[in-house]
Amino acid sequence: MASTFLPEEDAHSKSSTPIVPSYFNPISPFFNAYDRFARWREDLGLPHPGSVENLAKEVKGTHLSNYIFDGARADLTKSLSVNPLFQVTHSFALGSQTLPSSYNFGAVFANQKVFLQGSVDHEGSISGRFNNGWGANNVFKAQAQLSQQADQSMIQLEHDYHGQDFSANIKAVNPSPINLTGVYIGSYLQSITQNVALGLEALYQRPTPDTSDLVISYLAKLTSTDKNWIATAQLQPSGIIQATYWQRLSEKVEVAADIQVLSAPTRRDAIATLGAKYDFRVATFRAQVDSTGKVSALLEQRFVPAFAFLVSGEIDHFKNSAKRPSLLPGSPFDFLVTITKLRAHEALARNNTSNSTKELLRRAIEVGETFEIQADLWHRSWMNLSGGEGQRILLAAAISLDTAEILLLDEPTSALDQETSLLVEQAIVERVHSAKTALKAVIWISHSPEQSRRVGSRFIHLSAGGSYETDDPTPSPHPATPVG
Amino acid sequence: MPSEETKERITKVIEVGRTVLHYGWIPFIIYVGFTRSNPQPSLIKLISPLA
Image (cartoon, rainbow over all chains, first blue to last red; front, side, top):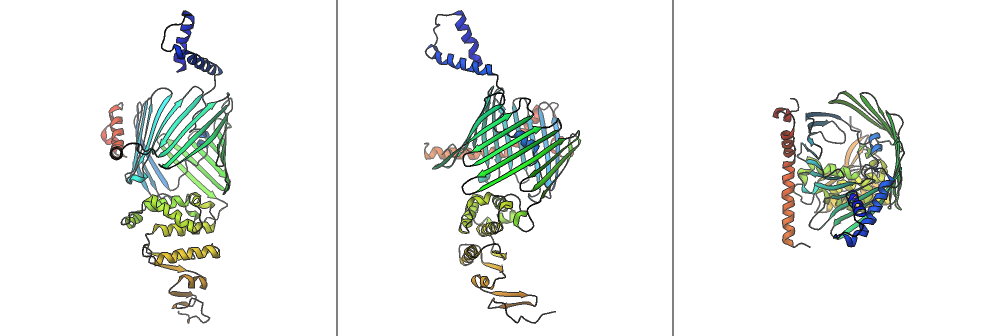
């Protein structure tokens, strides 16, 4: 805007000192002031600060969290045309511990102005991207994920504006034109000096027409003059601070550090990650260690341009992961979502219409709360849950799924204290007796005769001497004669 | 605030748009890519992972 006004204003002031009749005359002082401000701003020659979305881009490119995978993967990419770019990709993933095997077909088309990308997996879920440049500085982006179930679809609309020394972005996630629910995000980043840029990001959430919530976070970015190191910080008023530092040590070696601190009244937590990336002629090696004791590495070897061989590994030193459900990836929330996607669950849940994922998660959190599990624990990683928390969460999940008729529980309260144990026992027994739930029976393995008496109706006593049914769970001093 | 009837119509339009996007997006990209590519690739090369 500013630059288009400049020549005109100059012409006015030079050629015609008397006021030229124009519709803009009444407001021309504002234009003049704006132009003077714009010119002054241009004279500062501040650099473009990059976008808010890419604030920690260099760190993410150095760390391997975005690249790590398990199992085997094969990607076959075929470039059918270079200009404009047109590619199709067939990718196969097998044998992962965390994800089911999958096939994915993707197509990309791009020219100077438009970028189209789409992929479809073997279950028929589509994800797509559409970017369109309206000009050199304006980019419109749309992103969608469409699955067979309507409630799992997602759409995101976004507009980027890049000024000479600032960038602005507005974003809407799942906006509803009917009642304006959705998530709206606006962000702005402005260069203050040659090296410093400051910005803020506002997140406005409106999950239902009656509730809404605004969160503003503050951003800072420090770039060295030769662009060899970048430090960023992001502060959220709820008490989350994320700071990153990235440095290029040489043309081939980059290191990055990332620290996240959460200090809320209910919870304090911090995690730091340190990583390095080495670029070789035909290979890239990334290594990373974090404060939870995880060490991971990824090697990417390119044999020919279209064929790359990747090896990734991760070792968790501090946690004894075999003892706890921490063999599970992610958080309890992820676990529940994964279960709802299993075919077996779908088949069982079909006759029960209230088994949509959202409804299930709500129910699981509700059951969890009766076990004194706060809702936010469902989003914490299994690794960071105590034994008792994990045990109660798994029980809450099993109960709230409400598809099983029989539950097999092996020492389900082994990590719980007396009081919580009673809570859990009561809830499970109630469910067995309730006509509204699918649960009909529980096979409960316990070492405690008291507990057996509290929950059981029929008892089988197992010992080295054999097994027999009894009416009294108290261990008998004279077990049955050993058999065989 | 739009009337109930308008709301219903908007919901229907969104639902139809979603379905069209779901089934049409990949064919649309392939059509655009196929017609704009230079040189134009053969169809078999486009679909088969091995060709």
